[in-house]
Length: 225
Image 1 (cartoon, rainbow, N blue to C red):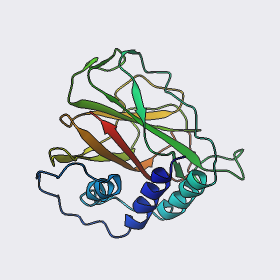
Image 2 (image 1 turned 45 degrees about the horizontal axis):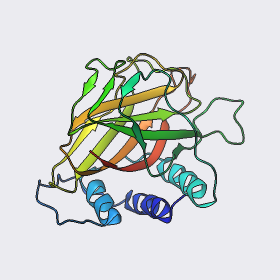
Image 3 (image 1 turned 90 degrees about the vertical axis):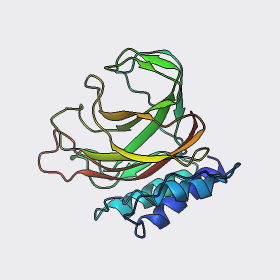
């Protein structure tokens, strides 16, 4: 795990309680831009929904990022990527106390996030071609049940293109067929350049039987689009 990854998670954790609800106007950004500065800029307009377990989730993810725990080696089976490749986010996220009995004492979900940048082709998508300047961001919640388009998931992604200053925020939803775990994504027109993504929010296990939603620590990715 690179030091930058742990520092980025620290920035996300520290920023959870102080994010502004305003939207940052698009403006030119100087280049090169420090990764941590870009992360802070991407976090600022996100206005993340903070649940009672968000901070606990961030601490789990931080512990795993700093103690040398291997990252989860998972790529969604529902993907049919015939052209292009995926770029992993800086670290795995986590959601505390949201799995059914049988997972104790580690009753948390690990969140695995990544991005597929255009040009690429994934025939599992409604529109298979991912053109240049477009990114498919995805997030898988490990040990949760299959995705369902009828679930009330509240997962979002905020992004900032540090080359152009353009930014945005969008929901994550089920673009592909049901996977073996809940896997949500969105295809975003970010433009070319270095793009910082922050995925945040919650996922509901559709067999939770009254369990609370999985409230994930923010997951940060820096990709070349």
